Image (cartoon, rainbow, N blue to C red):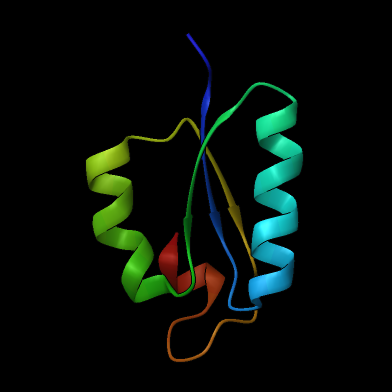
Length: 65
């Protein structure tokens, strides 16, 4: 069973590139473009790892944690 990782970043290029790299490494990946989007996604997906951009609009990466 693949480890689950949730990637949170407001830059689409970084989000997709990072997702692709982790999927190639065998992770089950979910993404969110904001902190507000990430919170319900984390509750549904139950990630084992969070990779969070610190500077997000409205809700910082620290606020997400």
